[in-house]
Amino acid sequence: MKYAVVIEKGPTSFGATVPDLPGCFAVGESREEVERLIQEAITEHVALLRAQGHQIPEARSSTTEVEIEQAK
Image (cartoon, rainbow, N blue to C red; front, side, top):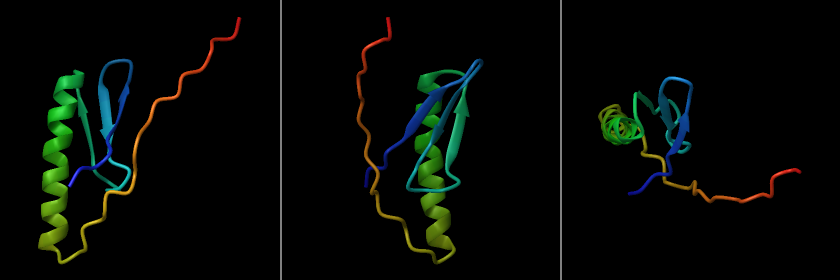
């Protein structure tokens, strides 16, 4: 299963969240690190949900990029 991940660059780090898995997030010093950490976080989050007998949320979110013109 593939989940959409949102990655945001902050002043000193990168953060990642998973819209379809509330509470699943990661923070890293680089984009590469946060991508690795969020993959681990998703795996652990799903394993915990299973262990607790919860249903695994379906991946429903998707992403796209929208380009806008800069104001002059």
